[in-house]
Image (cartoon, rainbow, N blue to C red; front, side, top):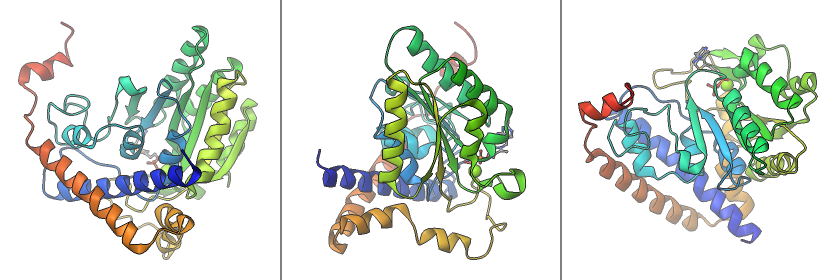
Length: 315
Ligand SMILES: Cc1ncc(C[n+]2csc(CCOP(=O)(O)OP(=O)(O)O)c2C)c(N)n1
Ligand SMILES: [Mg+2]
């Protein structure tokens, strides 16, 4: 793939995630989605750039803010809509919902609603690959707030002493729920925390998909080559509130607008010099696919009572 083709591919993927989540919001307001949703709009460059550095047999864990990662990893839109609508054709049979987009066949071995829970799982997956002599790596995505949770520190420490092939990716979107990172965390750069565990780290412009990709590729290559873990801090921003009911009134005035000036999709569109009509055509095509996937998902049946019991009791 040429450099331009790769970037065009990233552009399409990021826009697909953006439009998918607009649709999620719409379906939620129509009462078609059960539970809750946590949108990653504004942060699309992180998941798209990172995923392009992985092999199909690598592992990853994500959080409840995982729609973008699942799409970037190639999960079908219809199965994701169906999962959120609680239908049996969803990626977890409709019993997981928006916070639990997983697919073992694609190495997506967990999406965790418990803050920090994905990190030790990724370290375990990486360690298992190492012990079996495979050169698979694990990526784990989590937020800025997670770096204050015990499992963050335990996972980094273990990964370092065992030289596990794992890449820790902080999505620093400046907030943990409704608290700004500056009042919860005594550091400007969370990447500094890696030094306590002798892990190499870097701060990355999380709005620039090419910069994300380059940094993750370097860390993945290091892990695959036997040189152990890395920590990457992506500076990014979420456009919506923490979850579906949060109007995000706690933001500093002008902050959202300032971040939108460096929107990852707009930035890449400008770098590619994509003509207006071409951008419009891509958007129209993606929107049609998204609408179609959502409509098909809504026609699928709910799981039967017996099927739901399968996930609760051992047979
Ligand atoms: C162990 C635990 N504590 C608290 C919560 C409630 N909670 C859900 S999301 C969240 C904020 C996490 O912030 P961050 O790690 O920055 O991720 P972001 O939501 O910004 O992507 C909290 C405190 C939880 N789910 N799990
Ligand atoms: Mg956060």
